[in-house]
Image (tube, rainbow, N blue to C red; front, side, top):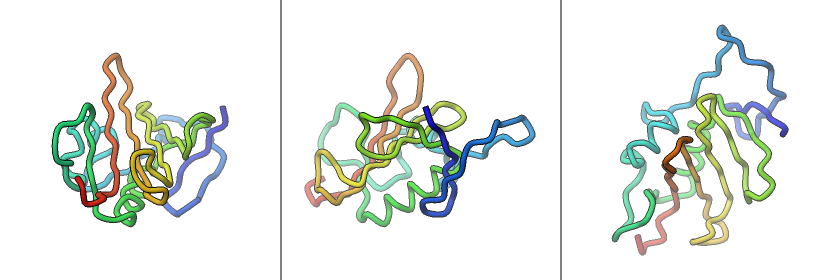
Length: 136
């Protein structure tokens, strides 16, 4: 399983070096929270909730630029992991939280980027971030 560190600049990747206590990776933040914290609070600081009930937490933002900004901020400190069955780039954080970035939504448009986040544990805790198509 190949891993590279995700940097703050777009597309910046370098081979992962062993992490020591003194060189621990800092997890990226958006609006003061890590990816894990956003998942655990249902994404309340990200965009808005869709209308109606959903089986999993989903947050909607207005533009692709917002998802790209969120992705760039949160991926800091994550490593890219090889997930051949995932149709996008998958990241893993030091605490094992997973963030996937797809350039299209399986439930939306072909050019609508999507974030898929999951916190590890016995109970599946997830969050999806999509672009609002005007129906949410």
